[in-house]
Image (cartoon, rainbow, N blue to C red; front, side, top):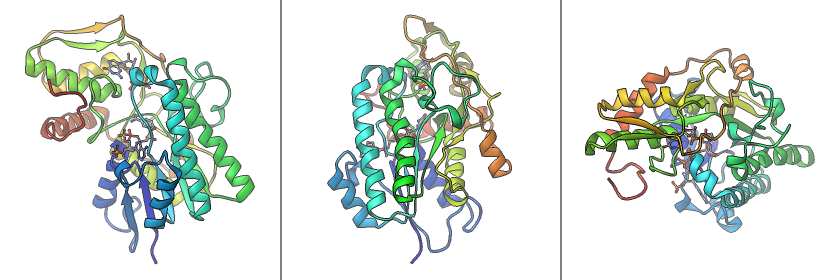
Length: 327
Ligand code: NAP
Ligand code: GDP
């Protein structure tokens, strides 16, 4: 019997990207499907992972040998600020169910997805895999951050007590096709693409939240998908790996907004609403460990990835996740 890889959260931004890479890279290549392998991309409709019984039923149905665990309550800065307890609680429940069911089912390997939000707010830059627990995370998303940090603690405990092969990935901000483009709850790139698209369509101003000065590192979802597949195939340690572009590739929110204006072809009025939060000023992460282990990786240039994402959104507007009623 070949391996069965269960991707939880398989219908989201990152899950869809892994599905794309697995279906499009040549079979047997570094990022491609292996002969005989079966990939399952599960949505919440297949089982609500906050519930232990539904989680168990999902594992009994597919009998995964490997799990890439992406399912989570996810959102941008403004959603995180509004629902701190919900982010903490739902993600703790989901993660605990997946880790414990993976242990009970003798899963050969489990990779869970963290985020650079887990890192302390006040810490030496660039962030690296060794300083996750060295101080409190930024207050804007402490619910989500603590839930994700706990996965690293659990991974070590499952490994030490039961010998489980559990590990984690730490991506920076992700974007790409199939993202959540909700105007208020999404991350910055999909939210601004949708806002700029509406501004162009309706002849209204394009308003960016905050000062535009904070810096972020962005990774294209198709690149991140390849890095997850690398981690599944070639990495066997409980310690997390940051999956990111280089620490010198930070982009300001204003640069992001400028690039979106260009990609959308918007020519109207464009401003910053400085009454809205900026969140963490920056959180540059090092990809030194990743590149050393992989022996190099070619990331998609930011402008190309952004153009492709905007083109995908425009072409798929009627089926994309756009949240509230269409403007
Ligand atoms: P996403 O597009 O919002 O997708 C979330 C996925 O999780 C969906 O497939 C959703 O299923 C599933 N899900 C949510 N609640 C669930 C539940 N209770 N039971 C079962 N499935 C549930 O998220 P994403 O951006 O792909 O994020 C994937 C992972 O990357 C997450 O762990 C996230 O924390 C991490 N991450 C994301 C970013 C980013 O910028 N997006 C950055 C760093 C880390 P349905 O489709 O059925 O709703
Ligand atoms: P973060 O990296 O976890 O803070 O998440 P985001 O992807 O939500 O990025 C937040 C940054 O983008 C902050 O500096 C916001 O002020 C800025 N930003 C500008 N406009 C928007 C918007 O429409 N939505 C979101 N989520 N952030 C925005």
